[in-house]
Amino acid sequence: MSNKVTKSEALDYHRVPKPGKIEIATTTRLESQRDLALAYTPGVAFPCEEIQANPELAYEYTAKRNLVAVISNGTAVLGLGNIGAIASKPVMEGKAVLFKKFAAVDSFDIEVDETNIDKFCEVVKAISPTFGGINLEDIKAPECFEIEKRLVEELDIPVMHDDQHGTAIITTAALMNACEMMGKKLEDMKVVVVGAGAAAIACSTMYKGAGIKNLIMCDSKGVVHSKRNDLNKYKLEFVTDKATTMEEAFSNADMVLGLSRPGSFTKELVSLMAEEPIVFTLANPTPELFPEEISEVKPKAIIGTGRSDFPNQVNNVLGFPYIFRGALDVKTRKINMTMKIAAAKAIANLAKEPFPSELKALFGDLSYGREYIIPTPFDKRLIVEVSSAVANAAVETGVARVKEFNLEEYREKLSHML
Image (tube, rainbow, N blue to C red; front, side):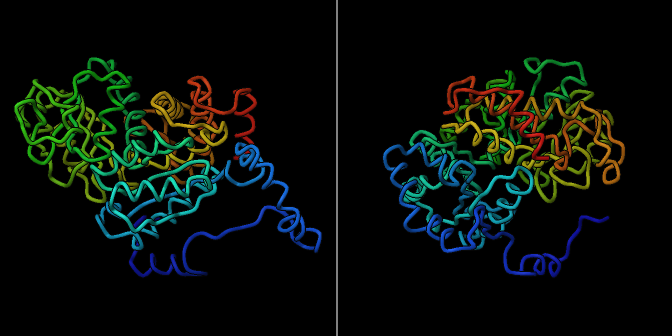
């Protein structure tokens, strides 16, 4: 079955049987006068008074504990760029669908028509009491860094900009498994990151957190090296003295991560890499280089893309629904690096497990190897493995409100959600 869709198919999908992709459903009975009295006045006053006395009880008497806000200002939407808040709504609704379908997390999409950092943060902070977590989405760099930083510091619920950290978590999982296959240690790897936007900065930060020591970042002007005087404060974190040209950067590199645009690096540069490199070309829908171009110069390369029609698709849906599932279930205040690393390890380990029989009809009989280093997004075991790893890491690092946590009981609870 082809994954290619036409414009008319996509438009019909979004307006039939009713406009949009989401709706609100009730969870309690409302069939009598008594039900009405419980759901609204006068009965609703009692939980209101309880929450007024102890705001934490909002987790017990409202939907807050399972509710995420998907928030964007539409300044960096997919491959469409700055299309504005209202035009971003179909994407944000789509994100809400993924939250619900993959991890049973409820969410509201909220499009904020504001590009000023201060005002945007004020809006998000003002509405934050409604939610158990906030998923920032499609906000352009460098504003997204400051927005996320402020909201993480000032709110007591988990905030994550998925465009940054989702890609970082999934590619870290893939990197861990690829290194294992090649018999290399993370600390011995030479990694080149082509791109210096939100995802590239987050990936580079996480790679260093995972153990990478030799990392070279390249932006549209070339290598981010110490002799340049045109770097913003975010790029300054990754300046290097080990290379000044792209050729020097790629020479004997073990990995290249492409988060840029088609053609931002070439076959000739890839040919300079180690004999058995990791090449992730994640520009979408057209990658920096197509897999067949990479294989021409490096036939032993382990290759990943952002596309579903090639092996090793780096898809953020492997991460964010389950990360928020785990964070919400232990009522965490933050999503910290330990939780992100735990998610990456759980994703990496799941790829090593026998491929589920129910997926063989769709994908064939896949097994852990060069063309299967990360799970497919439709592997239902992700909710158990990733959510439990994230929840456990939150408890262990002291950012969870839940104090009495039994990991095995929680895994069992998650397994029933399958």
